Image 1 (cartoon, rainbow, N blue to C red):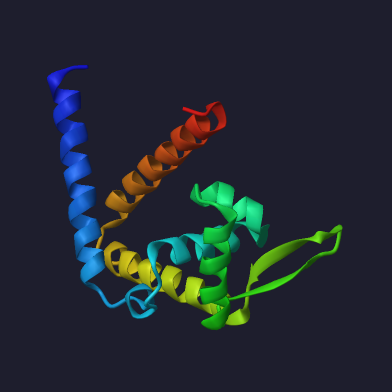
Image 2: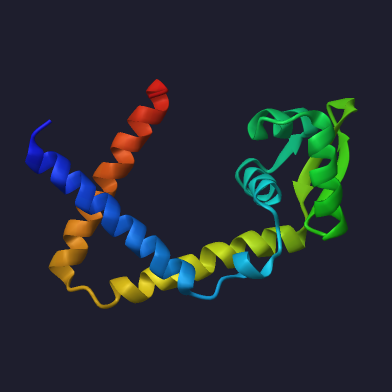
Length: 150
């Protein structure tokens, strides 16, 4: 890889980290939630998948079923998730977001989108066109890498 490509990748990475730090300074419901990282991961998994079994969550988190039970118990106590019987297999208990859990995820996403939108509102149209082209290209490459398992 050429030095210029390596330098560009390094600068882009540093810029993204810097943006992440700036976004983290903004008030977010994420920081008000008092969730542990594993609890937040469960919330995100459920937001993406709709529901999950304890085994699914254990596999996704890389932990044992007993650990998942404790995490889910605490999320149930916070009113963010609920458990119910799987309609296709009564032996399986499924976990899903409650309306409060869904609102939390929506609030976190909305605050991030609002911060990003405020920045984009200050960009000229040519820069927005370039950003659109670049982000679409990044998404396409990410989708291809994801599909091939790279």
